[in-house]
Image (cartoon, rainbow over all chains, first blue to last red; front, side, top):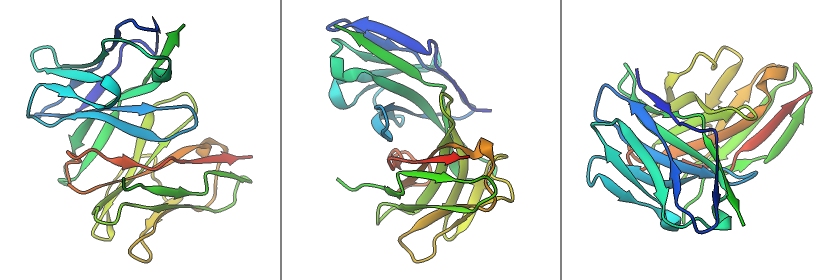
Length: 116
Length: 115
């Protein structure tokens, strides 16, 4: 069964430092993978997606993620953190069901704190 | 940029009451979803909907829940008799493609508080 594991429920970085948020997945089929960001009291905004094209995916706000099949990972990075990056980040995998439809399975989320 | 619109943004209801959460998906999207997020927990799948019928539903989506697309634009989630444990943020989402490879577009959510 598909699942997503996000290591670290809370991550703190200094402003200007590298951001690394970890996501590992398990999937019986080639996965579609996504990162979403949730700012306080807001909905989920798509940051980037992997859909079996380039393994290094660039998203909005300077974020990128690399799909590594051998490590079953899809870690999110940003070279230099900004105060406005403080939010909760969710990794998700698109999961096919027996009915042929798909749904997203989300990780438990990582809350990113950026220190001045 | 097209948006998924959810109303109301906040709803407080008494236990046992019926609530209807409303969503207007993106107009050319064909697949619709409801998810929920209990405070401090992960986002959980409730139900997917396509071609005017439920495609899949989770264990959470019991007989107290129903979905409807009454007029070709709105997509509603009804909870017939709310329980305290139904308190959560409910997100509607839509996608153009079945696999969601385009990435779901989520609404900003309805925060439901059952008292």
